[in-house]
Image 1 (cartoon, one colour):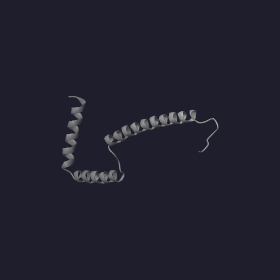
Image 2: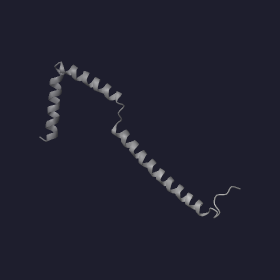
Image 3: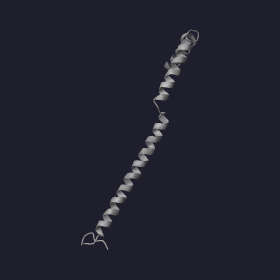
Image 4: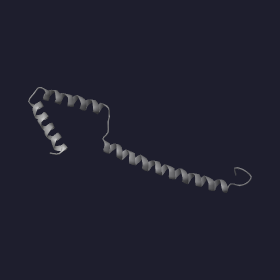
Length: 89
């Protein structure tokens, strides 16, 4: 018997044993309390976190590209600036 099946069997036996005792009610109450606590913590799933991480990386890349483009445009503008300074017409 492999390790996973031993653990699965042990879990099944413990669950069956707990179901026939007052501990089953305690387990349900504990799950409800923990569920409410987690809900108040405003947690997100791993999937939601990873999606936001990917979106942030994409946004950062776009920001960097725009910053480089702006710097290039500002450089072009400085090169074409009249030698006499910034005169208004």
